Structure formats: C-alpha cells, structure tokens
Length: 253
Length: 258
Image (cartoon, rainbow over all chains, first blue to last red):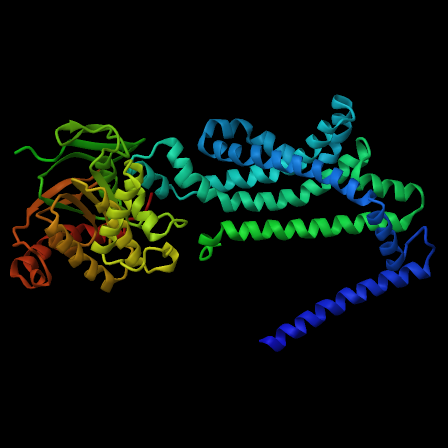
C-alpha cells in the first residue's frame, strides 16, 4: 500500500508541475497582455501581498461572501425544515422555490441594481440569492425523507413539536443541509464575483476588472489564482463538515 | 377488578377501506394478550390505536379507566423495525423516553444503565445502532420502552425483523424479564407459535374487514420457558390456531388484486 500511495502522490505532483510548466511556457510564447507566465504572475502576486492591496481587497470580498453565505444558511436551513413540517406552506411556495432555484441569478442583477443601487446590501443580496436555494432545497428534501417510524416513535413517547425538531428533525436533516451548504459555498463564490463585477466594483472582482482594463494580465491572473485557492479551500471545509455530520449515516449513504 | 386496557367496538376505516370493526378486548394488570392474524388484517393498526397514535373511527378505548385521546404516560411501545435514532448511541436511545418524561440527569443515568443491563447490552452503551446486530438493536428498543416503567407494554411484531435463532433467544429473555416485572402487555405477531408462547389469551383476527374470529384461552403454566414448547397443550393450541388461520391463508395468497 505505501508504494501505491507514493505512485499516486508522484502522479499528482507531476500533473501539477506539468500544468505550471505549460502556464509558464504559454506566457513566454504569447504577448504579456494576452497571457502572463506563472513567474510574472507570482511576482505580481508578491507585489500586491507586499503593498497590502491583496489583503484589503480579499478582506472586502470575504466580508461580502461570508455575510451572504451566513444569511443563506441561517434562513435556508430552518425554513427548509419548516416547509417539510407544514404541508400547505410547502405546496404554496414549492413552485416559486423551484423557479428561483432554476433561474440563473446573474439575470436578476440588473433588476437588483435598479431597485437597490450600489451599496453593500444589494451585493449581499446577490450572494444570498446565489447561495440560499441549494440550502433550502436540500434541507426540504432531506427533512421530508425522515422515516415516518421515527416521528411515530417520538409521538409514542409524547414528544411535543419543539422536542421533535430537537431530537428528530434537526439531527436527521443536518447531513442533507450540509450537502446544500457545500453547494452554497461554491455558488456563493460565483455570486460574490458577479456582485463585484456588475454592482459597484470592489474586492477581488475589482482587481480582476482593473487588471483586465489595464492589460495587466499578471495581476489579473494573480487575483484569479487567489480565488481558485479560496474556492478549493472552502470546498474542502464543506466536505469535511458534511462528513463530520453524516458519521451516523456511514452504513447508509 | 377493572381491566387496565379496555377496547370496545373498535373499528378503523381509511376512506372506503374498512380495516377492522367491532373489536372488543380487555387486558388485566398482569396479563398478556397476543394478537395474531394474516398480514393486512390491521393488527398493527389496532396496536397504534391503543397507543393513541391513530384515532379510532368507531368505538372506544380506555386505559386505566380513562378514555384515550393521545399517547399516555405509562404506555410504551416496542417497534417492529426497532425505531432507534441512528445518530444516537445505545445509551442515548435508551435515555430518550426518560428525557422526554422530564427525568433528572442523575435519574436518567441511573435508570438507562439499569435497563441496558437488564436487556444484556452492558458494554455497548456507546455503540451506534448501525454498529450492532438487529437482535441487539431490538434489545435497545426494549430497554427504551422498559426504562419509563410502563404499566402497559405494546409490542408490534418486535421479533419480526430478526433472524430465527435470535428471535427464539429474545422470546425467552422477554418472558423472563416479564416475570420479574409483570405488566399489561399486548403482543402483536404473525407467528402462531409466538402468540401461543407469549399470550395468556390469543386474539385471532380474520376476515375482511377483519374482526375477532376467536379468543383462545391459553392456560399454559407460568413461568413460561423452553419447556413450554414441549407441553402437549402448546402443540394442541398451535395446531388449533394454525387450522383456523391457514385455511384462509392460501386463499389470501392466491387472491388477485382487482
């Protein structure tokens, strides 16, 4: 087994090294305005780290992203369980939720702009709208799939509605909600960039826009690289959380 | 003496489907009534009615002299598919009923452990249901029901989902547990020998809609144990109930749904 692992790691690093070499080569074979080599990109990254621009812009992006994502989870998960428990409410709202889930949220941005202008709030709304539907949808479907026998057990032991949520609905639904949150983590990141592009420019989105307008491809690629790393890191956290809360599902995924 | 459970003229109708009707049943303080019948005869539904989970459409149920409207304190059910919460450990599952009954932390720790010991799960307190066998899971379900000190114990085909050998072991353990703390027990099963082994009386449900076809007075000596299976009366009663049910069972098996 250790030998096999070693081969797998070697393959992974070889693949990453090959990608980096291709990036470098592509930069040298074309003009800098079209594609900057990896070395130039990293140098540009070093500069923005050094002069504090990256930290400031990343902090601004992160504030927007986390606010929108947190709202999506805080609203989406409890509302999802509520919809699963109250049939008439679910039937009344289900079609709207499906429509909004299916709508490409970017299409709503001009509308949000004309309604709410350029402040922080409309940008949070964009991140929220991108992130909330996967949380809501997965939570509703999860909470609806709770084994009726478990609800019957709770009633048999004279559980009230609140105790039923605490002991049955929430623990049962948590892994499903986490699946939704993991999707929301990815979609929220798209929402963050879209909001920074199309509403008032700020954060990492602004860095990409400015790099593009100034034909400064290196700083643009630097900002994109940071965003990729951020996305990968957040997805890993999401996966970890999902597994952590689904430990008891180990036998029945 | 007034019976602990009284069922009078019980009937259930789901829409156009009359499941059962006119069922009368009395269970004394230290009495076990087994209910046996073909699948779909409504025996499990009747048990849920006695638990207060489903309202009757006809008739009345009283427990300890009071009309039943919702699940009562002092009544506990053991479920066919165990009904354990997969995210709770054995200990937490057993503690569930006590917690909902508002027991103190010390009382929960004490009683839950006591009944984990009674059903023989000592040492498995921190296992999750998926880590233990079906038989052990039902032991856990039994401990959960016993821990609230029920005066009425409702058993919904409790050994229907475990293998044949485990089933025999659990039957005799349940009998010996019942001997040390006898209560009113209603035991639903589709296994004829199990019904005769457990019950002081066996209620045979039959027909469509089903009704009480016969009440068999078992009169086998207690305590019951493996020797009971060798008792001539056991064989005789089993054969009698078998003849009553099996004549219809073949008809039911070959019935084509219209």
